[in-house]
Image 1 (cartoon, rainbow, N blue to C red):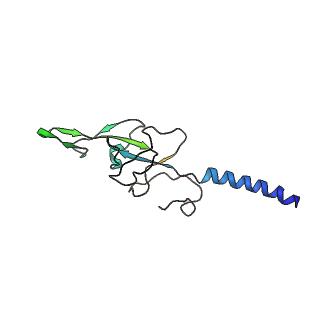
Image 2 (image 1 turned 135 degrees about the horizontal axis):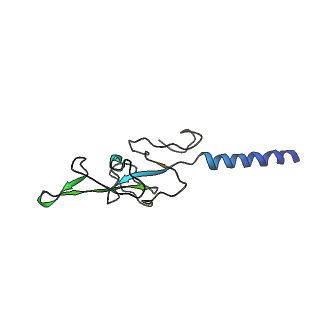
Length: 130
Protein backbone atom coordinates (compact mmCIF):
# COMPACT_ATOMS: atom_id res chain seq x y z
CA UNK A 1 0.00 0.00 0.00
CA UNK A 2 2.85 2.31 0.67
CA UNK A 3 4.17 1.98 -2.89
CA UNK A 4 0.96 3.19 -4.50
CA UNK A 5 1.29 6.52 -2.68
CA UNK A 6 4.79 6.95 -4.10
CA UNK A 7 3.53 6.29 -7.61
CA UNK A 8 0.35 8.33 -7.32
CA UNK A 9 1.94 11.62 -6.17
CA UNK A 10 4.31 12.04 -9.17
CA UNK A 11 1.54 11.12 -11.60
CA UNK A 12 -0.77 13.67 -10.05
CA UNK A 13 1.93 16.35 -10.20
CA UNK A 14 2.70 15.54 -13.85
CA UNK A 15 -0.96 15.74 -14.80
CA UNK A 16 -1.32 19.12 -13.06
CA UNK A 17 1.68 20.57 -14.91
CA UNK A 18 0.43 19.26 -18.27
CA UNK A 19 -3.04 20.67 -17.78
CA UNK A 20 -1.87 24.06 -16.57
CA UNK A 21 0.66 24.66 -19.33
CA UNK A 22 -0.58 22.85 -22.43
CA UNK A 23 -4.27 23.69 -22.64
CA UNK A 24 -4.32 27.48 -22.39
CA UNK A 25 -6.39 29.09 -25.09
CA UNK A 26 -5.23 32.37 -26.50
CA UNK A 27 -7.24 35.44 -25.54
CA UNK A 28 -9.06 37.11 -28.42
CA UNK A 29 -7.68 40.13 -30.27
CA UNK A 30 -10.17 42.05 -32.40
CA UNK A 31 -10.10 45.21 -34.49
CA UNK A 32 -12.64 47.75 -33.22
CA UNK A 33 -13.78 51.24 -34.15
CA UNK A 34 -14.18 54.24 -31.83
CA UNK A 35 -17.43 52.75 -30.47
CA UNK A 36 -15.85 49.35 -29.59
CA UNK A 37 -17.70 47.70 -32.47
CA UNK A 38 -15.81 44.81 -34.11
CA UNK A 39 -14.84 45.67 -37.69
CA UNK A 40 -12.95 43.99 -40.52
CA UNK A 41 -9.42 43.09 -39.34
CA UNK A 42 -7.96 44.75 -42.45
CA UNK A 43 -8.29 48.13 -40.70
CA UNK A 44 -5.83 47.02 -37.98
CA UNK A 45 -3.34 45.08 -40.10
CA UNK A 46 0.28 45.65 -39.03
CA UNK A 47 -0.88 48.07 -36.33
CA UNK A 48 1.48 48.09 -33.31
CA UNK A 49 -0.07 47.62 -29.83
CA UNK A 50 -1.74 50.80 -28.59
CA UNK A 51 -1.64 52.52 -31.99
CA UNK A 52 -4.68 53.97 -33.73
CA UNK A 53 -5.30 54.08 -37.48
CA UNK A 54 -7.89 56.07 -39.35
CA UNK A 55 -10.06 55.06 -42.25
CA UNK A 56 -9.83 56.57 -45.70
CA UNK A 57 -12.34 57.05 -48.52
CA UNK A 58 -10.41 54.42 -50.50
CA UNK A 59 -10.83 51.65 -47.91
CA UNK A 60 -14.37 52.76 -46.94
CA UNK A 61 -13.25 53.40 -43.36
CA UNK A 62 -15.54 56.30 -42.61
CA UNK A 63 -18.58 58.21 -43.78
CA UNK A 64 -19.52 61.47 -45.44
CA UNK A 65 -21.05 64.00 -43.07
CA UNK A 66 -23.01 67.17 -43.73
CA UNK A 67 -21.62 69.09 -46.67
CA UNK A 68 -19.86 66.05 -48.13
CA UNK A 69 -16.94 66.18 -45.68
CA UNK A 70 -15.31 62.79 -45.12
CA UNK A 71 -15.31 61.73 -41.46
CA UNK A 72 -12.88 58.84 -40.85
CA UNK A 73 -13.46 56.10 -38.31
CA UNK A 74 -10.66 55.40 -35.84
CA UNK A 75 -9.49 51.79 -35.51
CA UNK A 76 -7.38 49.96 -32.94
CA UNK A 77 -6.81 46.48 -31.57
CA UNK A 78 -8.78 45.29 -28.54
CA UNK A 79 -7.24 42.57 -26.38
CA UNK A 80 -9.12 40.04 -24.24
CA UNK A 81 -12.53 40.75 -22.80
CA UNK A 82 -15.85 39.15 -23.60
CA UNK A 83 -18.23 39.36 -26.52
CA UNK A 84 -17.37 40.74 -29.89
CA UNK A 85 -16.81 37.48 -31.71
CA UNK A 86 -18.70 38.55 -34.85
CA UNK A 87 -18.37 41.59 -37.08
CA UNK A 88 -20.66 44.36 -35.84
CA UNK A 89 -20.81 43.13 -32.23
CA UNK A 90 -19.58 45.13 -29.24
CA UNK A 91 -16.63 44.17 -27.02
CA UNK A 92 -16.14 44.88 -23.32
CA UNK A 93 -14.06 43.81 -20.35
CA UNK A 94 -10.74 43.94 -22.22
CA UNK A 95 -8.08 46.51 -22.94
CA UNK A 96 -6.47 48.43 -25.79
CA UNK A 97 -3.07 47.31 -24.47
CA UNK A 98 -1.96 43.67 -24.52
CA UNK A 99 -1.00 42.06 -21.21
CA UNK A 100 2.66 40.96 -21.22
CA UNK A 101 3.01 37.19 -21.25
CA UNK A 102 -0.46 36.52 -22.71
CA UNK A 103 -1.03 35.08 -26.15
CA UNK A 104 -3.68 36.57 -28.41
CA UNK A 105 -5.57 35.15 -31.36
CA UNK A 106 -6.97 37.25 -34.19
CA UNK A 107 -9.46 34.55 -35.18
CA UNK A 108 -12.21 33.02 -33.16
CA UNK A 109 -15.86 32.34 -32.78
CA UNK A 110 -17.69 33.64 -35.80
CA UNK A 111 -14.71 35.50 -37.20
CA UNK A 112 -13.44 34.71 -40.66
CA UNK A 113 -9.75 35.30 -39.94
CA UNK A 114 -7.20 32.71 -38.97
CA UNK A 115 -5.56 32.96 -35.59
CA UNK A 116 -2.59 31.76 -33.63
CA UNK A 117 -3.12 28.43 -31.95
CA UNK A 118 -1.47 27.65 -28.63
CA UNK A 119 -2.02 24.44 -26.73
CA UNK A 120 -1.18 20.80 -26.68
CA UNK A 121 -4.28 18.69 -27.26
CA UNK A 122 -5.95 20.21 -30.32
CA UNK A 123 -9.64 20.90 -30.81
CA UNK A 124 -10.86 17.59 -29.39
CA UNK A 125 -9.66 18.40 -25.86
CA UNK A 126 -9.31 22.18 -26.04
CA UNK A 127 -12.76 22.90 -24.62
CA UNK A 128 -13.84 25.05 -27.54
CA UNK A 129 -16.51 24.69 -30.13
CA UNK A 130 -14.71 26.02 -33.15
